[in-house]
Image (cartoon, rainbow, N blue to C red):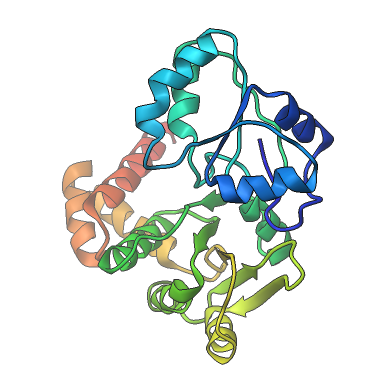
Length: 276
C-alpha cells in the first residue's frame, strides 16, 4: 500500500485500516514506519523487508500467507515496488496463487509529472540512473531510442549530491535546450518544482545546491528534432538495395547508433513497405 511521500496526511482511510488490521506490517525501515504509525495511534508488529533480506525471507512469509495471515506491505514513502522493495515477495505470492491487492496513494514520480508542465503521456519511469560511466551509456541508449522513434517524458529519482552531475550528463547527451523539470521535497513544507531547459535547471541548482528527495523529468524530443526522420530516410534508401540485416549494419555505422536499435527500426520499415 502507498504511504505519504512527505505530508503525513496524504494517506487513505482504507490504508490506515489495513495497517491496523494486518497480522504484521512489512516495511523497508522500521524507524520510518514507526513515525507514521505513532502519528495515527496504530500499534502493530513490524517486520523489516528490504533489498538485502527480501529473498531469504520469502519462504517464511509465503508459509504464513498460506496459513491465512495477511500482511500490509509498505516502503519508506510512496508506492512499494516502484523503485522500492517488495517485487520478489509480490511475485512469489502471485505464483503461489495468493491474493494480492493494491491500496493506491502517493507516488513521487506521478506527483512530479503532474506538476512538471511536461507532456503527461506517454511517460517512462526509469528508477535511479546508473552511477559512473554507465550513466552516460544509459542516457546515450535512450537518445538512440529517440532517434529510432521514441517520444516520451522520462522520469528518474536521483540523490541531491548526484543531481548536478546527472543533469550535466543529460545536457551533453540530449542537448542544452531540452525541456526538463526537477521536483524537490514534494508535498513537504519546502516543496519546489524547477522548470526550464537543462541549461536553466543546471544554473538554478548551481546557485542553490539541491537538498532532500529529488524527482527528475526530461521532456520528449522537440518536434523539430530530426533524428528519427534522418534515421528513417537513411534506412529507406539502404533497404532499396540491401537486405534488412545489411541495411541496418550499413546505417548503424553512419548514424552511430546501436546495431540492434537500427535493425529493429529497419525491420519495422521493411514490414511497412510490404504492407503498403
